[in-house]
Structure formats: structure tokens, C-alpha cells
Image (cartoon, rainbow, N blue to C red):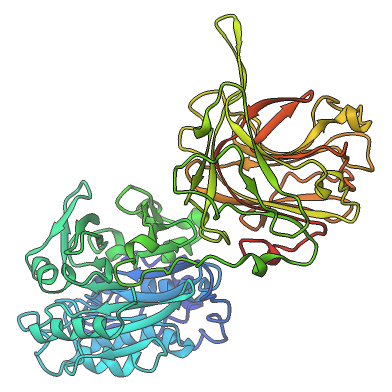
Length: 628
């Protein structure tokens, strides 16, 4: 063991060096002195943990047995790992920590006591964690009905049972379950013994049945093995767990075990036809007994992703210039078996036991906020996919008389505008219109005309003359087809536009032939709000980012009477200009839904779905948007 002065200082700083720990003063077979944890004081944990955030972390510690091996061990790496978790619980939003067993090497009472003392720092700060027995922690020849043991004396349910996350355990004391809040919901973790009995499997099923809507993670010591490529397979005992518990328990979506090495993973389909991610993580074969390597599972429910990283806090805590050659190779493991991401559609994966109820439609009266001057929705039409008739009138539900009628571009048929049941999940109406349009283009030496159909406000509609001097909010729900970028026919198509060129309203700056106002998609499918304000001479543009195809999104433009800001799904975007934008210029002509025009010529029909549209004559906060 390399006991350099720098290492000794590290141990002393962590409160881990006592008389005889460093050097050769211990007798053969004697255990290292007890740890002095008096240096770990103060509240370094907990207050910053956010159970409502869609992002949280599960910390996993595999086999630490060589760190507690008679007089041959070194508790400092595990102490450093637990200390790191304490210090980073808030910034990494660490919800729970799970040890995978083989805490010690020889199941000796003194070894277990020493490891238990390291874990006291978690106990002192009430950090949620679980432990389980590996084959080196107990009599490995027996099931969990083996009876009392030094392991139970130190790590039995009496220890973690004091934590608020403790759910319960088997009467034998070797199996526990834990519940922790994260991402606005409850999660369950099963910590199963090295050899759970048949009765324990029955118990585990009863735990899941008692929490039928809770997703579950199973931790145990022996479940999967792997090879040097990272490809894993179920061990013999793992097949027993799979057949006797996991396959029929749809709530279990992730299993993590140690025991074998190297690390690996596989995905198996359970009886419900859904994926179960099976992971093995163990580093005892590496430098310094694995150096208490820590694996972090970063759950991100906003991205439907779990990002996994693996590193040694003990090595990370050493000054870089003082790390030896072996330590430098182990500070962080970045190969595909140890640093990777899992794409999991959590709502879909959990749908079998915790389906998310779709938001019901909302009555128009519920969203007619003060100042609504136009509200159009498309849930009072024909069957899904049916053409919108030429003589349709879509009523303005605000009661202001800003009704819409259909206009079909020359050469286009009835199917250019169709009713649809497609809708954003937070849209008040569960319906939309599908616009099958394109822009005019040059083709074979001639001009290919624009294709499609659109809607326009009726002549004399009050909206046509509105200037919105006190501000406004314009909202729409939109979905772009998967092939929207496959041709060049859809760049700068408009969701909503105000007819009339800038010059018609006396605006000669910029491109005077541009429309007075347009909410458009750029050639790269970025959202664009470009207008000639009533009080400024030039054109002002707000730019968004490029939108994904085949996904619904909500767009809102908010003007506070001086400036405009663009929002996607309630989030304010970056490229909002500081240039003044007071009111909207007008020529008294109609607003168009699903058509782009230039120089007073409609040159493009929209391609995609448009859902509810609302215009309000004042700025609204995101909490007041239609999607809220």
C-alpha cells in the first residue's frame, strides 16, 4: 500500500488516521484502528435536494470488500465516496444511495464494524441509503434464512429503519425496501440478499402489489455477468430472480448488481413486453480495490434519459500532480460500459402500471381570459381526415365576430385542408386542422404555383383594424410533419399572418414588400415573429430555435407595449430584440391562418397541423397561456 505523505494528509483531513493506521505497526491478522469521524461535522446535505425537479440522481456503490480485508484494507476511499455524496447531494440532486453488497471481504465482525463506522456519516446527516449482503458479508452457503450474523448486527434494518425512506423488510432482516420522492413522484428500491429465499420473492411481490403505481429498481448482489465487451447475460441465480420475480413485475424497470466483473449491461423484455435494463457494475479487480468507485445514474425525465457516469471521488480528491500512474487511469471511467446514456420514454414505460391520464378538453369559456379578441379552435368540424368544406365558417369563440372562412389556392383540391383529431396534450380543444400546402417555385423553366388552402378573417372583422397599442399575446399550437425538411417547399411558411405589405402601412424600412405581421417557420424550421410595429418605421423580428418535426409545440408571442418576446412551450427564448415594438401596423385587411404572402401575393400554404389559436389585447405571463 502506497502511504505517501500526501495520502496521509488526505486521511488526516478526513478524520481517518488514528495511531497505527499508516505504516507497518499492525500485527498480521489485526484490523486497522477504528475511524475517527469527529472531523465530519456540520450540515453538508439535504437542504438543497429538490424532489420536484425532473432531474435527480441515484448513487450506486459496488463491492468495497478489499477496502475492509483484515489488516490489508483501507477505509479512506469509501469515506471519500460518502463524503463526496454529502457535499454534492444538492448540486447533483442525489435522491438515494445504494450499496450492492460485498461490503467487506471476510464477513468478520471487526471488518463490518469498521465499515459501519464509515457509514455513520450518512446516519448523522440522515442521508437516504440502502445496503444488502453479498456473499463475502455473510455465510454464503445459506439463503437469507441463515439467522443472526455480524452483518445484521451492523447493517440490519435497525440502521436504515431510522430513515424516512425506509419502507420495511423481511422478518429475517436481510431484505429491505425503500421509497424516495424524486421528479414529483415516488420511486421504490428493493435491496435483496445474496440468496433470497422463495418466501422473500413472495414478500417482494407483495411490496410491489402494495405500491402498484410506483416504479421500482431492484438491487442485489448476483444477477448478471458480463464479458470484456460489456455484453451481459443473466447468471444462474439471475435467471431464478428473473423467472421468479422480475419478468412478471412490470414495475421493475432497472436492476443493478455487483459480484461479477467487468461491468456490462443488457435489455430484456418482461412478460408485459416492456424493457428491463439489467446492469452489472463492479470494480474490485481494479487499482486500490476499485477505490470505492461511484456510479451515478442521472435521471432526466424532461429528456426521457438516464445519463450514467463512473468515477472515484477518492482519486478525484487528490491533487492531480500527486496522483500516481495507476490512479490517473482510474479517476474517471469513460468507456461505453461505464459512461453511457439510456433513452427511456418514462411515461410509456410506466404506462402499464401508472398510466398518465390525458388532460381532458377544456370548455372555451375556461380559456376566454380578459382581453381575448379572437379564439379559434377546430373541434366542431367533420371526421378525422375529412376535407374542410369550402363554405365553412369557423366561429370566433371570443364573441368579437372575428370569424374565419376557407380560401383554396388555385389548382388545389378540397383535401388541401382537413379536419384532424391530432392535438397538443395541453391544448384546450382535442382537434386541429391539417394544412397540406407548399410554396410556389420554379420548375422546368416555368413557375410552379403555391399549393394549399388557408383561412382568413371575414371582411369587417374588428381584428383587421386592431393596432394593439397596449400590447398583445398571440398563441398557437403547431406540429410539423416528419418530412417537412425533405424538400425546399416549406421554408418561411406562415402559421398566422396579417395581410398587407409594409409599404401599404407606410413602412418603407427593411423589406417594404414583407407582410405586416407573420408568425412563421424559417427555412430551417425555426419559429419567427416578424412585424412592422405601429410606432416604429422598420421591421422587428424575434427568432426561435429550429423545431423538431413530428412533435406538437405551443408558441406564444408576448408584447408588453414596448418589446416582444417569443416563447416555446412556456419557455422564453433567447433571440428577442431590444428594439422597440409598440403595437402592430395595419391596413385594415384580413388575418390569414396557414398562408404566407409577400408583395400582396399569397405565395405559400402551410404544411402541418395547427391547433387552437388565441389573440389577447394585453401581455400574458406564461402561467396564463393556453397550455397552462
